[in-house]
Length: 422
Image (cartoon, rainbow, N blue to C red; front, side, top):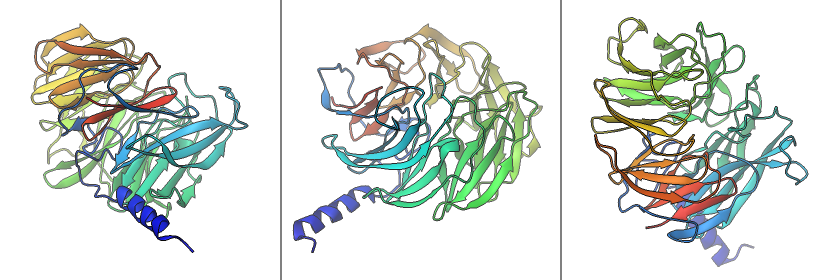
């Protein structure tokens, strides 16, 4: 028989992770937060930190994974890829895990193995657990790209469904995080051949629709996370891939419009939407930043009609951008931060800000946060003039993006998860 205290603990745990999925200062339910574009409404965030100061807690994270943390109430969720056999070796088969931590102290709540995989070796800036999970209504949806997808009870870690039916041939591993729309779980599957977008029934994991991506790009693989937007009351799924960005009806997968950008491939940055425009970077080899107008007239091929402007210098290969007011901020992988007029593309400044960087930008508390690959966190004052407010070095490799919890930051490094307080 379950004791009264045990029952109360179970109920409290369930309540902690079944909080509303509506945007709040406490929830960070998916990659880039509740608005999916790297903004937080939280205030009083930390400005300075170090390995020994402004640390609420540090929690070791086993295995290798560059998924970003997500937050629901008092629970934090991550994925990681542990070596089968327990001995770390980059070439080892991987045990793919999801885990939950108590946000108050960083201690593990549950840790479950979902799949084992003999996978191709990932790129040095990738891992077998790079896609970020997504939380909604007490469920955690965990995606490992071509290696499998699962739905868990967020309170207990119990697997509600899992599937490896939608395998494909990747290049450099997996990367695209999933999105939720009504009763669908949607993700990009931009493989070496036959790239597509896939929608699963979020209650069963069964296929609901697929969209076959068509472009002239010779290299078909990409790693981008789609973005849901609203255009005059119509929901559109903005999904960039190699050589093309498609806008789909998320209910059916039917294309609404597309815009071609030639041979761009290995597209990583998640697009953003502001001022009636989609902003995206075209990927390798030389990225170009495109501002694409979106309106009710956007139908079919809009390549020749809906381009607002482009920037071909210091565009990102990997970090996602952010808009604050009328300014667009983006950082090249070499650490050059650019501020441009979001409406016209006129550049206000382009300055060295960090070292090599892959993590996406965070706009919060009237500040812009960057986290580079060596663990340096840089806080910038938004505006047309370049101004660094603080530099904070954790001294650990870091490719994951920030998450916000209350008035604190979560930073995932190669071996730890930090909760940073003011």
